[in-house]
Image (spheres, rainbow, N blue to C red):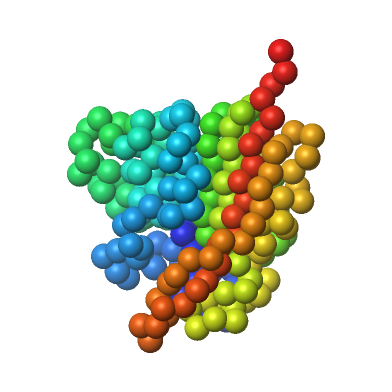
Length: 225
């Protein structure tokens, strides 16, 4: 999976929205699908963190992975699309061998992939929009991969975006709130912040529109001595 399904509007072949072939073709269709800039909520939440081991889930063209590696993180970057991963790796190499060597690129289908348990100090998943029956198990697997003291960051397009003029699929079932993502986390094990954060985007007609990101930030309770 990658950054978003926000301009994939066809519903005639529903499984294609989370199929490897669909995403490979989508990446081949353009020299670049995304802005090349790190996601703003990642910057907001990770800027002050001590670098460690990070998992970039649905890494796409690698902007978030590169941003983390620049700050000293060792990153495992996962995406369903081999085309995206090759493009991301090439992008990382433009920053030099030292930075590129901090990132491991891995192809995986996030609907059934299980990351190693307790392996990461930061798990970051941005704009992975799946049906609830696929998204919730994925989020549980991601949460299990967070080390004691580590951070789980899940960001999505808020359902309220459907009422704006920004480009979003007419698929309400693919949208979620941060509070919904938080329901699978045991409050005895996690310190959770779940909120809707506004930011400004540009719609297809060039107008500035206020949209909202669903942002779940959860810190796993450190292991007790």
